[in-house]
Length: 502
Image 1 (tube, rainbow, N blue to C red):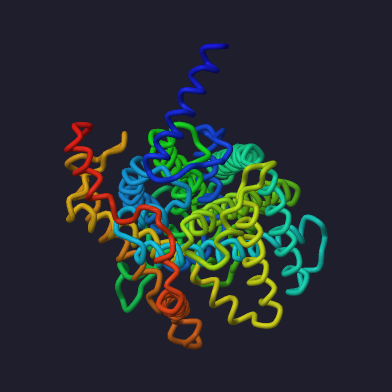
Image 2: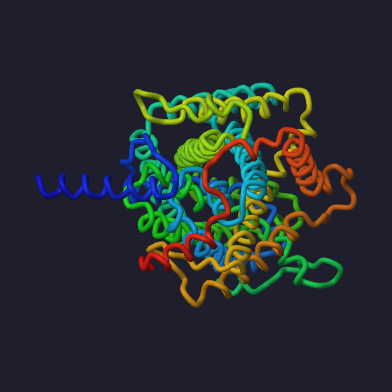
């Protein structure tokens, strides 16, 4: 027992010394295990929420072969994960994408990365709460009016903010509980559908069932792949809490990869089960059944079984909200600690009792709640703004991926415990090419019959967020206030080589 205690002290000392060498001191509660860290990323990714939310649109766009997009997107996102794993292994600092962009390129680049990622997370929190509201209303027998659903969404944000304020240990336990419920639910429901409620042969996975765009299937498949893209982010959240995870340089890259493997596998399994258990694919393809997930589950499990699944979905939504807020608050904390934004002192303050960034958590709850409340009066505008959620996170990913490529060109050689070695360049290039293609696929206007602000929603919102960020950055020049290290990745390897430590 004493040996384990001594090992823990030595690990803590090494973690603290590593962080000091990177220019920071941390008062976070560093008690989150690898499995708890992984669970945070898994519940952020939330395969059940992701698949159930976009299954109908993906199937209608590309037919049953849309299943293969989950495999392809997962393989490409793994390349993104590997590059980010290299970076966090060398720079295990709270704030994730913002902190990594700062060390790879510099202050201005990281400021814009953080700006885009912060808004994407806040909008995603609002979107997840809004998506969960109908399930909550069903369970408690509430009216499904827009006003009631908005109030429910805001109440969920308030509840998860309160949970996050309770400390890192509770966050870790909620993440583990959410992971266990979601994975067991996905395996149990998917397994039952495949064993006892299958209506389609496996060969249907190669039958497009007439899905075409301008007479060709490839554009239809690309459109359906967007649904898979919504299910493969969240692994970066493992790095957002780097200063709360012991031996973070080794543990977080492993947790990130595990999130892709397990989360992606669960998403594929659920998607496969839903396709093969669908009684009438033609009805879904035609758009006559707008909620095929509920139709399939009720037909297979009955109303009582469906209600049990709804409870699992609610746990998945709630744990996803907790994880999203944790990621957003650590980003805002890192922004504030580096004095990169208005209200830096408030955002970078840690609660003396729970050792979590209380100010940042309050902002990460208030802003999404305000976005949700605006939907009471500006429903179409809010729906358009929410479309920025996924593309904003992908854009922030690619700013770090491009930053890593720029750093490599300047001489950076990753020196953390996890490194791709000679595969670094090709994996980095593949990740960048894929990311640019994914962003283009998500933003591509495919509904000319819709209003312009709906058809071009992602382009409009992304342009607006970037324009406001550039304007704020140019006027405020907040990126120049802090003295934390920036753009030092290429120089670090030179220093380490000279000192004979590489």
